[in-house]
Image 1 (cartoon, helix red, strand yellow):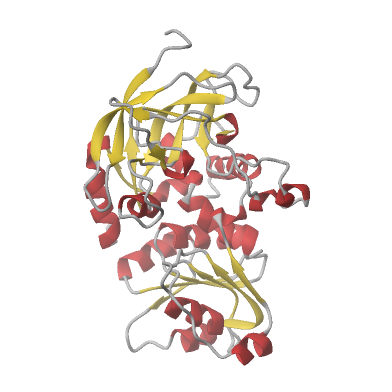
Image 2 (tube, rainbow, N blue to C red):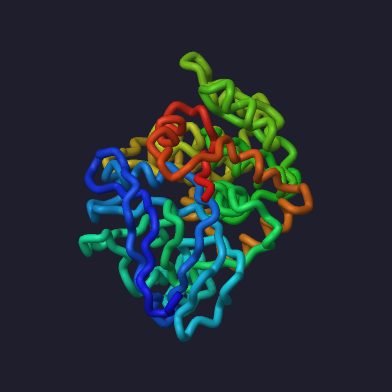
Length: 366
């Protein structure tokens, strides 16, 4: 294949707000100087992809969906030094720039100027596609910036490794990086889907003694136990969750409470379910119209930290290899997140299964 040849692949496209996705022919241009083409081996189906389809992110249609991906570097641009052809990589949407004010202050996980591919992928008629989170990996191959590729152990199942690219990393990082959970801590997690269960796995990995899973769905609570929850609370209409958490923590509340849902009600619950001077971590994504009304004096009198976790405050080059190594050692059950392996033409059914709570993650395997 010539280095300047355009590639035609299959890709899952969202053409307009709320319309069902379709599999289309996608044209990938030759890589720019620092771009790479990655042959996608697997890509997880994330709530963010559904949000793109439904207009919850922006209106830059059409979108090429998919972003939780692992694959093999197939072609590289002329100036690429970060990866080589044949490298096994997880794709990430935080390719830190190294020079913005966050990076200069030693906080690259807040980078304000991350890198993406220099050229657009298009439909056959020339219409430019917006890749989900700058990746667009519900496709046989995709075009990304070299720094969006993180090399990991090639022995890791692509369906497992790719999940580090978004949801699983968000939850693990919310506990380990943002919440700074440590040995002996008590942790409560509200919402036990993929992100919440990843937070539970992270809390267990960090050495928390008491890990409380909170959800309305008994099946999700059962899954939470498999990831390390020591106690569960069914969030029924008549359940006082704050009181229930306090009963499990000697009347104090949890040291760290992770809100993996992201609504005013769950955030208020998280706020009061923590110990005095405890930490709340918001990792569930609210919608723009949501508002929070609480007594300001409670923020003052209870102290502690109220944090938001964006991508688990991760650094892909630091965290992805470490987490895949822990998986290989049997210390991090990443494979338990993979509920179903599907094809490119099954995205809509995967969205439905995700909405109904039947799966933690469906993964497109190519």
